[in-house]
Picture 1 (tube, rainbow over the protein chains, first blue to last red):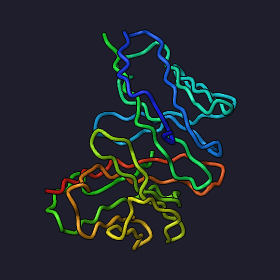
Picture 2: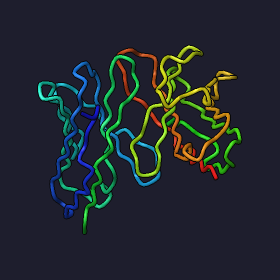
Picture 3: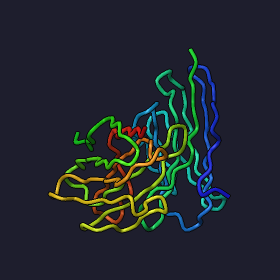
Picture 4: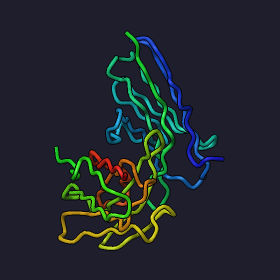
Length: 109
Length: 115
């Protein structure tokens, strides 16, 4: 089983739609979880950290399910500008990140 | 807002040549990382660096690779003898010292093309 797995997509959704991505991780000792956004040939940009209690930032909501070892990202009211690849990153006590392959989102007009 | 910077943005080199990729981390970052991303693939951890020494490295980071922070600001990745398969985007990242904070901030990357 891969350390961090994501559905590569693409997810093609119309503007205004709600879309959700999941990311599963295999190491139960993982401590920190993140969602990054990556535009084509650019660096990963931190979207949000994922806390046990879940967290929300505007149209974005992230959840962590430790029992089932996955994190999720929900995007409400999708905008054209949300089109990007969304990377899940998982960190254990050594601080390095293990990334998933990313999920590609295309928001269509 | 301070940002991580990397130079050059694009480096073309011939197989067997040495390259040095440079990064200037954010000033309050004390943990530093190099990652690479081969085109179409995932971002992969190479090495982490803290207190002027390597704290962890991946199996990708073999004897051809080295890192240093020569002057307290720049953080460099050297590839001694490049191979075709070293062609990738190389990202530098940094993290603040606080043990409770795991967030890393990435530079814009250097695209390395080995011909």
